[in-house]
Length: 268
Image (cartoon, rainbow, N blue to C red; front, side):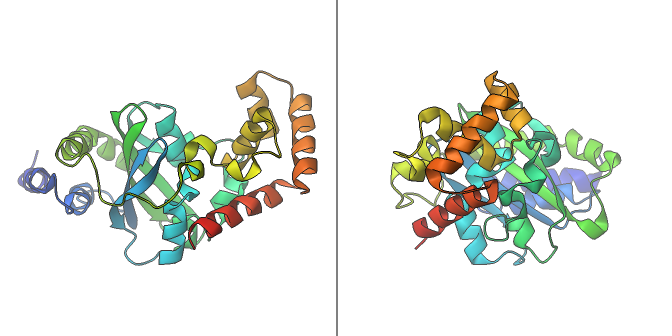
């Protein structure tokens, strides 16, 4: 370890329990790795997401960030991974995302996705540290690179991986000091959170159909849904047809628009 790294780690330790932790971690990680934006979120089942670190550098409209915090995060692969107790460590978003995620409404929506609405455009690679804190409670600390800077090289990923224990220990200590982060109560009824985030469909769809609608919104293809549920693709197609009929829509894009409208109503 060189003196600069030691000094930066000391700064991280000193920032634990303060609002400067994310900034100190960025200074440490930027020592050898180039990235354009960063963010840190606290994700908890059935609780609103909390923005712990805003490293978007003013590139994301407040309206988009607010919509993400009020429900858009429910479609984020990092959030889904945390709620499914995915192994800790450094991960590329592309390794966590469902097979049709990049063509999903969320991945392409400037209304919900902070990276897409940023001035960097639609092609931003994101890598993130998953730091489990308790059952279905985790911090995700992400770094992002713009399209014109290319994806994170493997050498950068190895460097970031060596610092994973520091990032993890810092947020775990931070959580012990500040287990209830600012940002709550949200003012949102529980029915607008994870346990029923397609609650707008309640009464129109069966439980099975609602779950399939949720998977479609998250970016799963017919084949992926069939694999997850242990059914045939043909059965998935039948479910989709019935979902569309009951909701009087004709495509996944229409389904996503219902979700967008739902989020928009909750932010008024």
